[in-house]
Length: 156
Length: 156
Image (tube, rainbow over all chains, first blue to last red; front, side):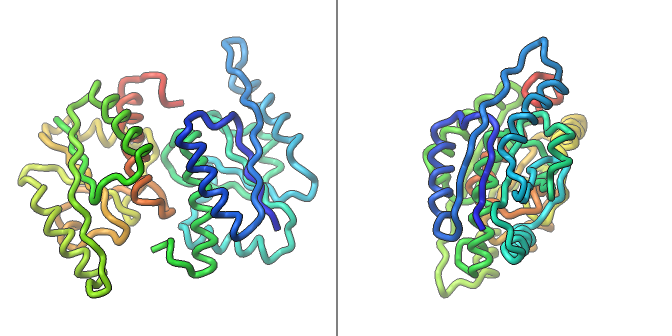
């Protein structure tokens, strides 16, 4: 299995880029990882949120291959503890999935078309965090999951 | 009312320090804020987790004044959405509390003595995040709360 993380809009802050690279490289000790970025749709007064999400959805759909197992990160999703998330990953590893595709959306959530494509929807918190920061939270959590599965020291 | 944030152990990474300063300065437009750091207890093989937490608790207790309203950040706490957290802050603003003291613990959680002192216990997520990163998540959330209360644009 490999993991693909799909981000919408480039990572803005240098420190976030560095930290993301750090965890991406650490993750690669456990599993092949690819981070793909879709350019953000420019907001404009003429573009409603609904149209914004639709335009974004078209770009996301192009990145989803038929056999991908698609997991959305979204406030409306199911919450897991770090241990439960590790088990969730283990479950996916056990089923012969080729590509586990995580999609981290923009500030408005996803269009209905994307929810329809999703195999699971996961929420990191009931709170709204910055969508830039969620990238770091999530990749750290993914790294943490593998250290839990390997019974390594990182996770208390 | 003023807000005091009590951290255990110094902030390790430079980027985190910078981001914390940034949000601290933004927060100060809304409310007086003070960030205090207690030195971390050094772990050692001879120190059980229980003793570690007890030693930490003694240091925390010294920082709590009798009239402080104490809120712990802890995985076992209650979860709030960003809007609910903003209402929570508004509720505290309405009651004439002088100092709202948030305590962000170490990786092992708090000693029972600290839970006994707490007026509330709040959880940012069911997942375990790095205790360094939680500082940034939390201060961003506090800033977000004030922008929500003022009906400002930051929060979508």
